[in-house]
Each structure stands twice: as C-alpha cells, then as structure tokens.
Length: 627
Image 1 (tube, rainbow, N blue to C red):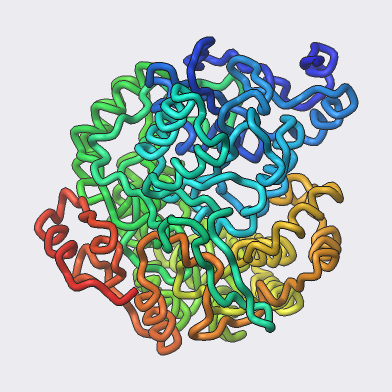
Image 2 (cartoon, rainbow, N blue to C red):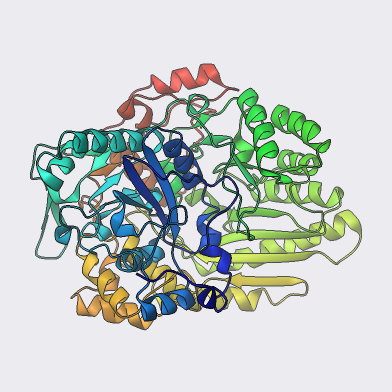
C-alpha cells in the first residue's frame, strides 16, 4: 500500500497534520495491545483535546500497551488518499487502523459523527459492527456525547461511559488476558468479557422496542448484562496520573498552551448545560498538586502560558491562593497564567487582572440571556446588577471591550426576552461611559441557538423551528444596529441537525450512514455543511427531523438514552423542568443543602472541595432522589 509522499504533502494545507514525529511522541514498536486514539476532526482541534492527552499518557506508561494518535484528514488530503488508495494510518508507527487492536473515538460533538464513518472507511475497518470479523479491531466510543450513544450504536462495538482513566486500562488488560488465553469465544467472547467491566456498554446486547407512534417503548438487555450502565467516576484526581510531558505539535493548534485541569464537574445546575450534569460530582485537585504539575509541564513543553482548565474555573475553591502562588512562580519564568472561563462578578475580574487572563483590550462573560426572567428559567443564578458590577470593575481596571455570550431559542422565551439582550448591551456601553466619561466601548454580542440535550432539565423541550430561529436572529440583529456593537450568530440549520442527533435513537444510524455516503464530512465546519444533504439522508431513512428536534417530549416518555446513565435522577431533572416553567431557582449544592440530583449516592462518590470539606461530606450523605 502506498503511503503519503512529498508530492502529496506539498499539495495539502498544513502538511504537519499528517507527518507525526513531534516532540514527546510515544513510539512503542513492540506492544501486546495497540490502540488508535481517533479524534474525528482535524489535527489542530484534536491535539487540543485534553481527554486524549490524558489517555495517551496513561496507556503508554503501561508495559505492553501502546496508544497512537490519528485525526480526520481534511478534504484535500482525503481526495489524494482515495485517488491513490492510501489508507488512514496512525501518526506514531504508521499502523493502518484495520491492523490495530482497538480504534477509540471521542464523541465530542454530534456534527463530527460522519467523520467517524469516514475515518473507519479510510482505515479499512468495516463500518458496521455486525460486519467485523475475527482480526478486525474493536471500535470503542467515549466522551461527553456517549450519554446518548444510540445514533451510532450500529457502528461501534462498545462504549466507555464516564471517566476513562481507570476503565480503559482495565479494558486493555482484559483484552491482553483474553489474547494470551487463546482468544476464547472469538470476538463474542471478548465482548462478553468487556460487558462485565463496570461502565462498559455493548449495544448489541440491548434490544429496543418502539410504539406505533415511533417513540421508544423500552430498552431491554438480551444477555446477562446490567439493565442500566452507570458511568465510571475517578474519585481522587490527585491520585490519578496526569500527563506532564505531552506531545508538543509542530504547528499551531486551537489551544496552543498548557492545559491544567484544576477540577472536574460543576454544581451550579444551569438547566441547559449537558456537561454540568454528566460530569458531576465536583472533584478538585489540591493546590499543591496543581503547582507541582504546573512546574513539570513548563519544564517539559516550553509553553509560555498555563490555562487553568475546567467547566467553571472560577469556582475552584482555592483559586485566589492558587493564582497568587502560581503567578508569582511563573512570572520569573515569563510564563503567563490564564482562566478560560469567568463568572459574572467583580471577584473574577480581580482574578483576571492578577493573572492577566485577557489582554486589556477584551473581556469575555456569559450572561446567557438578556432578561432576568430567562436567567431564572435557565437557573443561571446571576442578575443584571452582577453583570454591570463585573464590567464596572473591568472598565475601572482598563478594559475597553467586552464579549458577551447569549443563547436564543431557550424554553418559554418571548420576543421581549430576545430584545432584552439588546438592552443589556446598551446598558453595558452606558456603564463604560459612566466609568470613563468616553463612549468608545466595543461590545461583541454572540448568540448561539439553544440545542436541548439529554440529561438536562430541558431534555423534554421541543426546539424552535428553523424559521423561528431565523426570525429571532434577525429581530435581535435589527435591535443591535448600534455603534461599536458586533453581533455574531450561528447557523440555525446546524443547530437542528445537532438536536436531531443529540436526542436521537438507534434508527438514526441509517441517516448518518446516508449522509456520509452522500459526501457529508466535517459537518461542524460551515463551508462543508449541507442541510439539504441531511434532509435527504433523513427522508431516505424514513425519518423526520421534527420528530427528534422540534417535538416536545411527553412527561412519561421513555428516552432512547436512559439505559446509559451519569447517575443524575430522572425525578430531579423533571423537578428542574417544572421549576423552570415557574422561574424558580435551585442553588449550588456546594454552598447550600443537597439538591437531590442523586449522583453522589447512586455512584457512591463524594464531592471533593478543598474549601468546603465539611459541606462535601454532608452532601454525599443526603437523601437520594427517586430514579
């Protein structure tokens, strides 16, 4: 088989995407078990994904186990590969995907799913799990979107649900033992063995029944496997090894800096937030551990910036001490410290000033909604006064521009709520004038389209139609025709397809296959996406987009994903859905009583919060909600 040659590399964008050989890459020529960590997007995006950095490190530190990387080739490279019959290979030892023992994909974004099929096809791996024979690799999926794996159920052999650090090694060692024993029972024998590992979901062992109206009747095990697969949780982040010598890319990547995960999970309870639910409970790394990791990462990589990474970095309980100490230590090495996400309060602006997280030309905050009514509905827990106090502190400290993130299309939204975004922008500009006496404040207002996701309070909600999304976008666009205001908004069509897949069932596999076969690649990239292609793919599969995206779900309806669980109780989410309709708030469980989401009790874990240890103990012992 032909491999990539110089004439090909000279005729594609960013040839360093495909060469490998980067500093700190792990090349293990001999290994009993070899896995391809496959990211279904381009190199620059995949190399920025922290999850793969962690798994790459953990697997390669193990004797006889090897993890290698592979990313989706851009359309220019795919054209050359198909024309010359060149298969997709890993970067480290140039293994064709079909020759690996495992190919593991992260389900990071629903619009990357056609890339998964494309990578399997380029790697000579049969697309459908039922077509794989002895000697073919096992295809695994994991990541945040795995909490509804059903749209891809036809294509993967099994899924890893939840944190992968411990369970992936268990899977690879189980495979090693199975091979050493002579591979008893063939592929089926190993799948049965894997299904006995906590957190492993084998879709072929579950049957789905549907009602005549197309809704799910039930999902039942067909073998002796758990009825519900609960996620795996790493309970002690200090105790799990963290990569301090990651691969350093040749070319610039999306997050071209050190990513230091300070904690995992979130307890704020925003009702739209999928990650905030599926990554519960909060587990922090200690300040001492983070300082030690930071020193090692700077020494080993040469990066001049450390990003303190998490879902809501400003909620880290030891943040002031961590920032003050780390900034002091890193300043001498000319290394900056940054926070990727800030709360809307003056405290965070003070922290941003100390770490110089954002250059004085810009500050990013996320009110999410323009009116207080909508912020209460989504349980954002901030007021307009909070926002204005935050920007006041920023303007007093020299910031001259602000970027504000909003969503439109949220449940129970009215035109008045949409127009309130424009009024909030005006108020921010006027606050700049009050503070500085000048009118030059630049505001960027970014409005994404809301997508209802599984395991959130809004999983029952029917998404707005494309026509309604566009109407709201142009309503807001007209209202924001103001000097020094830049309005940015997302394509409504991509949000519909995202919602279809996010809340889809097993029948969607045919539509995903149809779209890929018709040329769908990189659907998350606006210049590659075709809504017409997806409409045709759905119609050819006998499916309707509105059934998945636009239909409000029945209160007692069985969701396609409920046999794969992050531990959050349905009763809790239903309660939050009801409270949203009333505009009632739910507090942060780390700062008040347990709210009954059920995660700590169901999974047998405790919140780790170094600033609130006693509260963490009491939360974990509180009464569970009904599941």
